[in-house]
Image (cartoon, rainbow, N blue to C red; front, side):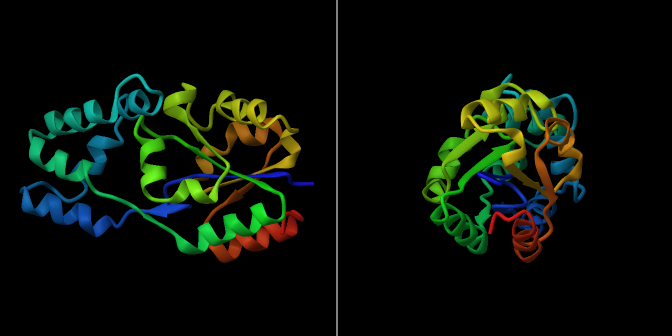
Length: 195
């Protein structure tokens, strides 16, 4: 029996529009794709998502790497859009007594972002790697979820748009789902008897 549904944040519950990034890059004379390439480079990405540096420090380092501080600052202010269909699904699950949580490889600003976007009204927990100190797919990130929820791993359904994040969840016995859209997620939840 599934008692908790744990969702990735970016790419699942909310989405960024990539064309906005390209516009910033063109406006500042940068190669399209360079901002994301710098932002998601290692070890920088791991440093910010494990809480070793703040989001503000991350954005400054992106600017330093590219020699384009203004572009990085503009990139850092881009906002994502919550998916209304996902919030509706979260509400439906909660109305059935299922716990709904987010597990994200995020930065120190995630709690404020989730609140500002109203996502916090639709979920029970936000598990953020910057607070936990471990990122998906590290089993310790998933063990933290188990410990806080106080339920068996086999009772947890985890959905992420990146299968590379599943390792620790699979090792611990979570039911996993590669998220592509709300429809296929609903089908997977129904198959798992969560809906």
